[in-house]
Image 1: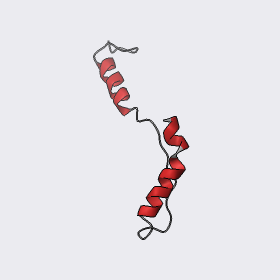
Image 2: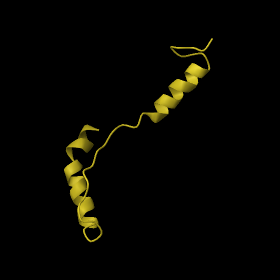
Image 3: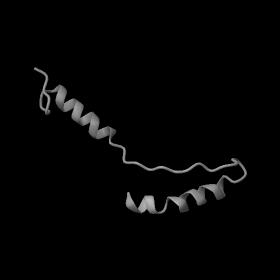
Length: 56
């Protein structure tokens, strides 16, 4: 993730070159880790009564 953040300016420049005729301004790029699968797993575990907050 650190490497992606360090190179995001280069990624933006590359996208800008490819889309130069299609858009006026290339938006800023933001990268983040998608934790939704971890969240689903945690919720399912709690619904089964195995999590930190089991349903009685």
